[in-house]
Image (cartoon, rainbow, N blue to C red; front, side, top):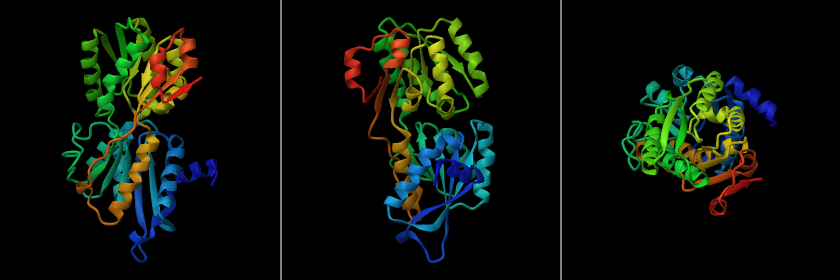
Length: 326
């Protein structure tokens, strides 16, 4: 299936994908819901990877149906979309990122929910514990709360005289405040002043970056959020225009022109999520399946952006990078 046809099919909301033969009941067609805060196009490669992984697990064609719902960066749409999935009687919901997980949690306490890229699922109340989630939610944590402080330390390595950092966040995301607290704690220990800037809608980005420029911040750290990933090209252009060294959670932001990123990859998280789907369709209860945390974090540096900003990346930091974009 080519890219255009795939996007067209997703926009219609239903797509047939394979299912494991050993999990299939005679005549049974499983229905899997996917709830994403971003756009259909944003998820094209990730969902193709998910389907590929299902085939690798030995799934057969024609016995599973996906119901897709995308909020297009309008988080207030998520509760309604989650309710639609529940009404369509899906067998399991795949929810990407904390805003989607929260919406799915509020929509059902019965249908299994597999979360992906959920920051601090215990702190946000999605699960009782990582080892014993209980309830109907399990899946993959992005560990972004833990890494929020590390990103500030990496900025300090690039900018030894760093004294004021702007923090971009989406307050609608339930994990945003938890990450911001980690950044504040790290900033105090490093003697850095932080100032937060809230963005709830992509239309606010231009205005907010103009305000950031006026406070003369030395750098920018971006709290992980699907909207900031969807708007990565605009954000990267604004950081360069405003001459703001920046650090993100996802490598896609750096490939778009951000300076650095440090975190896990969405591809890894979607890959892990298929294992949960498989187990649940075979009868496992989500509350008995421990939440997994990514085992790899990646440091990505964009040297082209560093040059545009007049920065020299320390050789010690370049030596630790998993990927350097020239």
